[in-house]
Amino acid sequence: MGKTAKRNFLVTVSGISGGWRTMTGGGATASPTKDPVPGTDKFDIISAPPEYDDIEVVRTYDPAVDDKWLATLRKQVGRARVTVSKQTLDLNFAKIGKPLTYPNALLIGVKETEPDAGSSDPGEIALTFSHSGPA
Image (cartoon, rainbow, N blue to C red):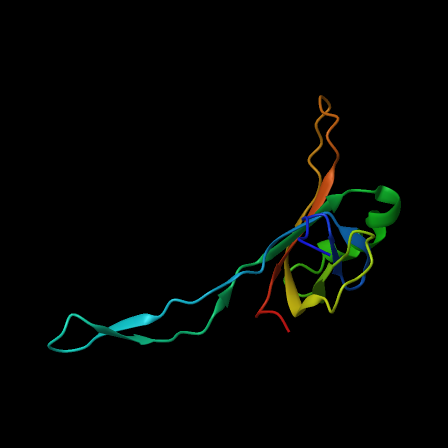
């Protein structure tokens, strides 16, 4: 297959039909403690649990498809839990392997398109999720 382009992924959110154009976040970091070793210039590194960046998914707003679920999710910020999935696709857009999933992700933000009478840019919807890491 070779290397993959960013377009060769399908991002989905459980309970919402269709895919998402972009997905950002989901990365992990840890902040270990450096414990000085007495009498040396060395440190023991004490591990810390990983922390995960929030995930944001974005797609173009389609009122015919999005209005019904959007009306529900506006009221579910801070309560709705979903699974966010990122599936690798081949050059023919067939699925490759198993998706990377973020189960039990908590919806923490809904951002709707911002009207602008002078713009022909597509309107977008963005959802933000907090999570405790991939499955």
